[in-house]
Amino acid sequence: MSASTRILERERRGGYLGRDVQMIPHVTGEVKMKLRELAMGGPRGKQLDVVFVEVGGTAGDYENGFYIEALRELAFEEGPGSTCFVALTYILEPSILGEQKSKAAQLGIKRLMEAGVQPNIVACRAKNPVTDKVMEKIAMFSNVPLKRIFSMHDRTSIYSIPDAMRQAGLDREILSILSLHDRVDPAREDRARASWNTFTAKLQADRQHSVTIGIAGKYSSLRDAYASIEKALEHCSIELGAKMDVRWLETSDIASASDAAGTFEGVDGIIVPGGFGSRGVQGKILSVQWARESKTPFLGICLGFQVAVIEYARNVLGMTDADSTEFSSNTTYPVISELPDQKRLEGIVGGTMRLGAQDVQLAAGSLASFLYGNATSIRERFRHRYEVDPSFITQLTAGGMVFSGRHPTHPIMQVLELPIGAHPYFIGGQFHPELTSRPVRPQPMFMGLIAAAIARKSPEFATTALGRRWLRSASAATASAGA
Image (spheres, rainbow, N blue to C red):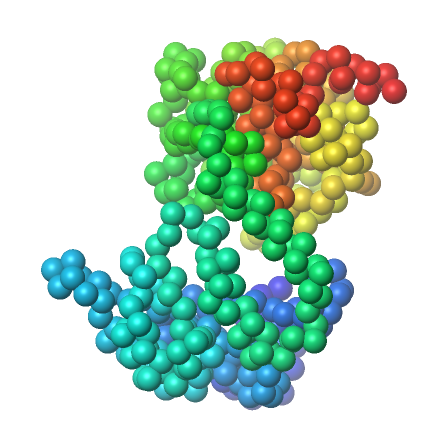
């Protein structure tokens, strides 16, 4: 529940005893309460050591002023050593002048200090390394020691920044500010650093393979909408040693099978991501059809999962007007719809959404289980409203579709796949797997997609150690199912 909702409900219950509800102290108080609840309870009831909070915008913006005030109050109330304020500023370098200018950064930090927040660390974004002269000026006018001014200039990879921070001693400075030196486990820290260094070393290694991945979405003109997908692909390409060409494909431009054929020519793997609304959905369905019929490795995410069900029902099971009730309320075959429990919440805007981390039970011997290391239970993050209608599950499974991931107790389908013999890699998740991908822990469903795309182009990849880990052969699938 958001802070604003809690305030409104408390006011309606008479919690403020008729007094005026004010931004200060009521809104700031709710912000502080939410942060304290997070610190004490954590996502799973575990007390946290550190809570990271990002306040967007620019110091002086009306929109974030109350959040800055809330954090100022929180730091005061919790006392010294409780908070570390990091001010992110930008160092201008006009090409016509040929030198860096710090005046704008100084003024921005001054506005923050006028709000009562004294930065402990200043991170300076810039195109080129920030000069000593500029950092000395920033230190002088921000009351921040020079050793706590850090140059965050453009690099060949953002993944080189953590090690640069470590070499600058910034990690130790933060531990000192927060009095956390005695909480550090040196052995664990060494292992984590070794793992990270192994990852960053792969950034510099030669890429043995090259693949082209098509992302068939309805927001392709706004790349930020798929930023997490792009990062998940990057994590996998580094791990698998592959050069990756990502093609951003607008499904609103795909109106026929011939359009799909032209759009996906030369593509080694296809991702159909999530989205809301009917625009571009027909293009997504045609994209899934192309992936299935051409046996191109496919990953469907959220809406991509749903249109995969619709496409299969239409073109394999003969339900010609199969659809989702989100797009057609009059369809004869509403294979995707809201469940009865959700429909009872229809009057609450957003009340029918399934949000956040949920458990997914995986079928033993399935492709999904194989990808997750033969796990039978995983936890992924959801954001959707519509589901596979339970009344069609029997028909869909009898027709060859496998629902390998389900809700532990309810008839909610969460992962679908086609048997390995029918398709080399065809899988979809009702959740958003891209949100759980990490540089040193690439997301399994994305890893399987990229591995299958590599193998499609270079069959010998299947015989390598990475190929054996991420590619499930038809014979192995049969043996696993038999076991």
